[in-house]
Length: 447
Image (cartoon, rainbow, N blue to C red; front, side):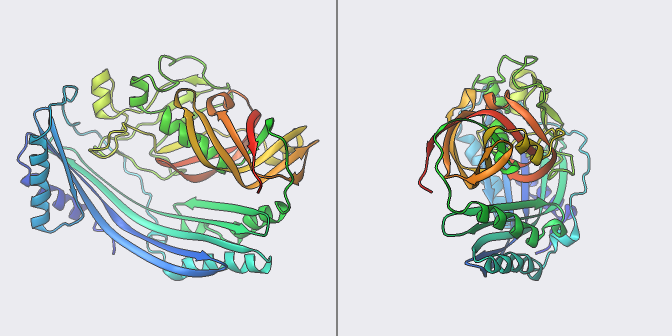
């Protein structure tokens, strides 16, 4: 199904708002088409496509708020979802901290839609999947993974004059290649489907799998680590999830609370969110239709700020930065377009500078232990190697770690000169590789 377009979503939004009998109302429309080609055991086994359009209505009666949603867009369904939102609002307790829905803000247009990505045929996805499967089979290994292309559109309208519309198209592919005693992983994300190279993905995953065969055991302890971009993305995920949102900041559950203007990370570290950058996956406004602002979280190690929505912004006397989640979500605002500043090192230089350390391809099954200090526990996966005297000398069995990500960002010794776009908890992130001193590994696996 092709995208409906701005004019049609505007018509649907007006129809919904016209049926809402409330003091204030908001409608969020999100839809599009997503197609997925999946492969396993070195052959393509599934091709699916889904198209949908969701309508979410927020009705405000004084300080009472009701939210209802539907995936149907017939006139009867739109009238029904408008009525249900009002009925739900009537049943709520008053929210003493709520003041108003946001008014209109100028939203910058960002062209994030490439027709070749949005209209990618299944044959193109099959070619990429087949290239990975053929390369894996030639290597005597087994590949599994998926290649997805999607086109989406989002629109927000409210009774205070807000109207915002955006469309984009994205492509992402991933694979895990497995042998008898090892595995390798590779992943790519892009606005341009032509940047998804199946042979390059296969080569990366196969190389890790081959080099990882017959791993050795190393004792737990503190090691200098070289974190590939996949592992660094996990750090950014948890900073976004635990630390860089207004709710955690206000409730003093974030290490940023009370520390704006203070040094919280190494002076070589800068992290920000930019919903307008084409180096990420842009989204120029939030689920309330408020324009996205660039937000610097950490600038050369100094804490600068967090993201806000209209609710927490009004509550604390701050302007929204355009990071609201859809109505009804209670998590609070969250970053969706994270960036970690690059440095000037290559991965080869990181290895050469390491006396004894561990190369980590990615983390897996990471979970918070202490949110305030961003202590996580998790596992390495799909390519873990021992470094000695400036060389990668052996594969090692996967290791469990328990480590403060915040402390790690105070011990960054080298930063990669190149970055990679990857999916993340709230949207996407673009990150380089890192060399970190003294990563705390607490256990070793049998695989």
